[in-house]
Length: 265
Ligand code: PL3
Ligand code: FE2
Ligand code: FE2
Image: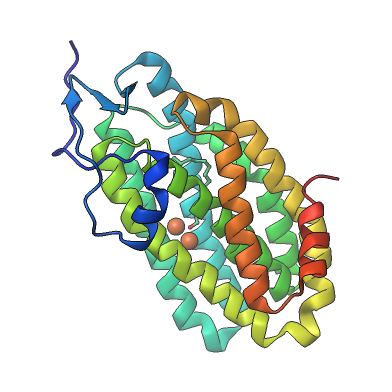
């Protein structure tokens, strides 16, 4: 039997424990046994050493590493558009770099080589739109893409992943997801403060970029399910983070519904 190089035995939680876990992050999840590289929870067993698991992980892990790298670059880039915020944005960028290293360690811990070429391709449409907005000095569009859409995508994926991750990755991801809320919040605050002048651009940017997030979710669904991550759950989590952000920015229910519909039409 394979021995999994996992450090310690972390908690493992069933989806029913979501609320508890989200609001009481220090509470220990139900204890489980790690048996020869697999974790058992309420009758469901996950073998982190299975070739099929590692194959899917090579792409998902690469997506996350590339996403964190691009997030770093994007925050540095936004800083060039609003120099008075550059220092603060650099702090966010540094967090993203730490996230990237954390996820690289997760791959290494499982003995997986991340497929970075796949991940670059995966991000390229969104990356292209961000670069175009940056060139045109469109701060609102840059914030919508990075701080709202990408961060909400990351938050949803990390929440779902935490429930089914190996103990080592679970610990890392729990730390990361807390930072992602800070990033989402940062973007929210900027958009809220500038809502009067940025609403039209925000709506237009959403129309162009939310469908890309939807298609990224579709593309990752098969590999994610190999990691025991459910697509419906990912979509639900995304919608919660996305709608909460838009509410906080100051949009009303009708505007939010209109924006969310861009994902389905
Ligand atoms: C922003 O700080 C980071 C952006 C990262 C984007 C993440 C996309 C996630 C796709 C599905 C991955 C499941 C999580 C698994 C983690 C190894
Ligand atoms: Fe991050
Ligand atoms: Fe982030």
